[in-house]
Length: 335
Image (cartoon, rainbow, N blue to C red; front, side):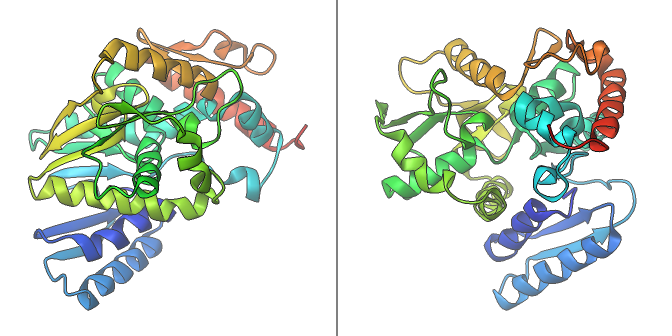
């Protein structure tokens, strides 16, 4: 587990009470004290829940030999707009969350390249904006299994609303953009039960969309823990995940261990599903396609070098330019 923020904690605290497979969770974070506290709480929850097979251990070195890595760390907080509003957070709100893609991708790219250079076969799951980061990883040649959150949260909400015991009968197409109600010119989440379209998706998602984003981490973390425990146990898991195998947006999938396949509804092709998600990506502020990244906002007056987007091989330079822009705009008032 890379990260010690609210989502990482939610995943670990659910793992502590769900996991029935012998496993050690190594927690890596920038703050060793926070990692130690996370491990204390998770280990204590496991003990009082009668789950002696799972242990949590803080780590302050390079990633050791492992079965897999879950990245829950990025270089841009999703909560900055509420704790430190500035001209930068105003730009993110106007441009869409997609403009933060290079910041969301930094740890995942670094760790993914590290894992790709080893021979232990460790899988990579990315929790940070996987709808766009995972396609970027794939374009860079970095293998990524899938993401968590976003469509997984939307599917969990729909599952609860429909009273389904699992998601084997539930298929969604959805993007990070759909965590909020889409605009009048945008498509809503597409959902099917037993291959029959679900008409009133908006009502199924109303309670989720009315709930604070920070609170939703508890649902996302629990869903992620169920996914990981199923993988570790070698079970077949029918679910809905973002960024599977580096694809843009979210899709219905089947996982058997680390073997992942799409399970699209009847009559929907893979190309149609990708096109749907790329339209949502444009509304979210960034599209990753054909080896390049294109932002949905005009940046010529703010960062000319990013005005036309950038090729994935130019990611370091683009990230540096965005760092400079963020630093400058953080010193200015919103608006």
